Image 1 (cartoon, rainbow, N blue to C red):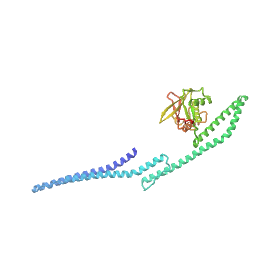
Image 2: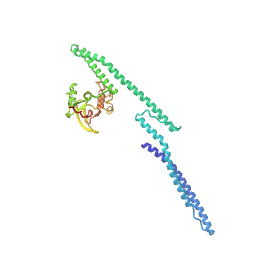
Image 3: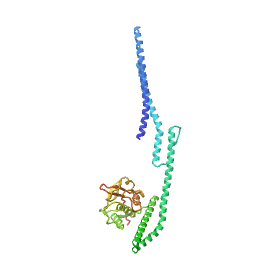
Image 4: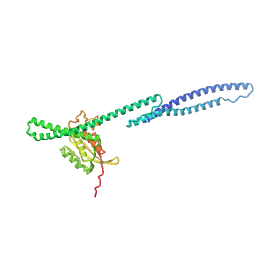
Length: 373
């Protein structure tokens, strides 16, 4: 890692700097001493010449060479010691970094063993305390999340029985609404509409609770793409509101009900929050070693602010914009995304270059099983 190498280099450079200073001091002392010895040797040689005796061979240069060699050997020794000391200093730091990486990857039970009584030991104790606190907080969040999921699922199931009775009553009100006067008829229609909205909300909450519990399963079957799209639009009365570009002649192996839910939520979102025309197109392509089906729903509305895009698939997320959900449960896009994920696919939300918002479904294409016989 760059930071670790930088620390290692600084430690080595620090040791080498000390060694260089010691070597320079040794060299200076060597040259000063050698010069003194050389002058002294010359004086002795001169006196011997005066006395008629041959001078001795100067030894000062030999002494200087010996001292220089000793200084170089000292420098090499210091470099080796610097390497060893650096490794010893960095070993606990590297171990701490490795444990921190495992903690970041989700291993919340990992801890370091503290030995000694230095600053590094204090750091290890602090790290272990942080890891313990983080593990406790994550466990508490998981417990609260599980309770919230169970609460939503339990409440949704408990509401189904009274809602069934309310829906039966609203059906009667719808049938008899023509006999009511203006205000009573409007009130009956309001009750019927809001009861239907509540029923959809409960159904969506039950569906979300299945995703959270991991009990949602695919019932795979083969379906013609054009038929699936046409049926989805026809049942909801959207045929005249959506422009469907020519679709590829393709049979898709998927869960037909969940594919219908995905298309309905994407188209319904575009009709509620966008502007006409709403267009739907599909194509196939090859990526990541497999074949894919992509289905794009595009509207001509104002698009979505950049800060909203990362949250469009969040549950109950509402942005203070023209695209704020005014109808529905607020779970439609989240359910569509979960259904796509269940198929090992995904949904992308973006603002189209030509204007408006677009939602693109990507589903892997599975081969249909061979028919027996």
